[in-house]
Length: 61
Image (cartoon, rainbow, N blue to C red):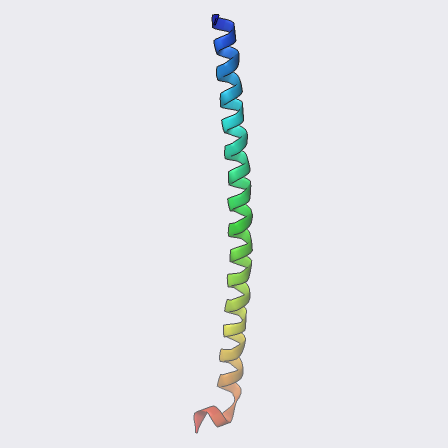
């Protein structure tokens, strides 16, 4: 194989590796975003429960 063919092959491998890394980053970023949204929703529910429990006089008896 000549030098140009080796360089072309190397370039294609590097480009494929970069595209795979970008795809994986996008996938993991989306997963992290979705989990963060879910966590925020859960935290909101907990906060709302704490507020309603603190306002309910029967809870203090």
